[in-house]
Amino acid sequence: MPRSGSSKRIYRVRGWRVTVANVGLGLPIIFIAVLCWINDIISLDITLWAILIGVLIILAGLLINMISVPFVRLQRGETKFTARNPSLKPPFARVLFSIPFFVATAYLIGFTNVPYAVPFVIFIVGVYFYFRGVVRFWINQHTLYFVTNRGRVVRVYRMLGLDQQEIMIHTNTSISQKRSLFEMLTGRGNVLVSNSFAKEQRIHWQEIDNSSEVVGRIKGHISRAR
Image: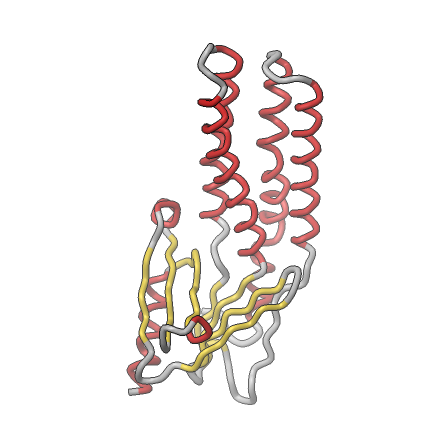
């Protein structure tokens, strides 16, 4: 398990794979747009706009990938007992899931006579999954969750700004776990650590690997607090 100073180590493990994935995020729009233009499904103007959007997504992803990782100063004698970055697989799965919707939209427009309202609705669904996956992919790259040996639960996020949340584990701390469809398909999960119903007293660990192991470790801290 990662110990003190582990945040940089976790990010270095990803390395070139994240760079390739950031490039890949913009390719579906470019590829589908060019393919539709070749088959005379969409005009050249729409194709050029789609290519521009795809290129901007690639450039934004590469720029975000260069931003420094979150850093949290620990107290004297304090170490990261359990540290996790959100997984990049669930957001990437959302991007892949959106591709069939784009393909179906192109097929309905180019090869059928159905009303345009039908492919438009399908296209909007695809756009929703696509951009939700892209944004979550960027956010997950720069989020770190950890618990220290003193029972401090921390979430730190740094991309366009710095956002840090932390709570202390005590006898009334509750913990819950849940998984969405994409997280079940990719073997990830969410963990909610809460001291009360107030938002500032709740830390949500999203889309992390081995979420059951994290739950077990945090429950160990709660047991020691009692």
